[in-house]
Length: 437
Image (tube, rainbow, N blue to C red):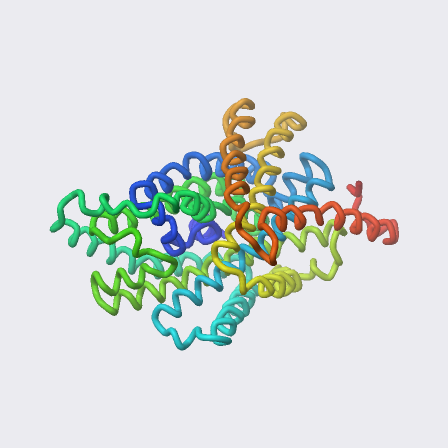
């Protein structure tokens, strides 16, 4: 992938446009926009700096797994991969859910009962087939989907600015929404700004990764922020009540403000963003079981590739796992996703500091500032992750608190690592990798 497809793929791994941010307005427009403007500085920028340095210094397939393994050894590398793959089970269930929510806004009968599950499974199958065509096909497709899904929003923003010009300046901001939705707004915004490290797992398939990864991080971070802030600010200007928004409400607003045709276009865009995000993340996550298999920590079958260098067995295995989590609610999926993903992100920030200490001579085409800066930039994201864990304490999944479930899933990592070590010892000595622990 060249730079532009990498930016587009990263955009979909993180965002996919304004779809999914509607629940932020539970805190009102003003608070919602402050959150959307603050998190890029407090959450996205530190993460992008960390990824820019590590991805340019170690542009290897497997990305963050390789960084943590090199910094802290095989055990922690395995935990990083396990946490990311476990988080993906819940993360990847969100996009088929959004797909059905938007489709149901236009054709409710199409998503009723078992039809909704059929659409979700169809989306998973489509993206698996698309991924089997290779990373360039996924990156190129992301560019096209980006243009298609944002075009209706460009029309909606213009219409909102026109309508708002006829209203008193205070009208949109006086509808401040429910202050009790602040915590939910922060969690939803964090989820909408996370996933920057996912692009690192396909480093071997990126053109000039040492140069293009830092550039892609900066460009995609700016792009994501703009595509969130401008549409919401336009809705506030147009006087659309904040409390009228919920997941999928963009179509209703477009239909009311402009006409049925734009509402339909927004719905189509919502389905496209779900496809784009699921497709790009399939490319990213499927490389993790592949590199674990290459390191003899998973069955070698998962490392098999097709003629386009795609780990096709890993793609299919991940798809089956993701399909099992389709029935959870949007908010519950976000809670457990943040708990598991946040833990893996903390390990990446630690790896940044450890590699500065252990390998000061490592060539770093891009540096995230001085050593002190490298130590400090992870502090605020870590604080936000701990806040998300605390805020999720009342969410229940599978009849237990989300935080407890997340802890149990994380605790499986050391056990699975021990089993992988036993398996490796039973393999013939000549088949073990030279760098075996």
